[in-house]
Amino acid sequence: QVQLVESGGGLVQAGGSLRLSCAASGRTFSGYHVGWFRQVPGKEREFVAAIQWSDDSANYADSVKGRFTISRDNAKNTVYLQMNNLKPEDTAVYYCAARRVLASEYGYWGQGTQVTVSS
Image (cartoon, rainbow, N blue to C red; front, side, top):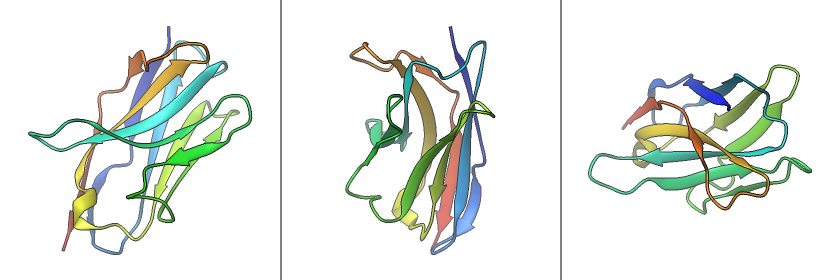
């Protein structure tokens, strides 16, 4: 079983950047797709980005395309979310999640990290 710990959140002005990290413990990310999601109080959690295990291909929500980049460092067993040109509407708790390659849902979640973008 994989445990996930996010870090890197904080307060930033609009137009600024942050890099979130998702570190795995208990086992490696080998054989897992990894995604980032975010949630605002009172709203449903929404997909942000994901990276595939097989070939590191990535996909993004339309709202973050061109501004966010997901990547992985297998040596450090960490997945990153580089967030540039942040907007106030990016304010949320960001969660990383892992999904076994053949699973249909993300079964492992971190505790979340708060990102606040001021205008």
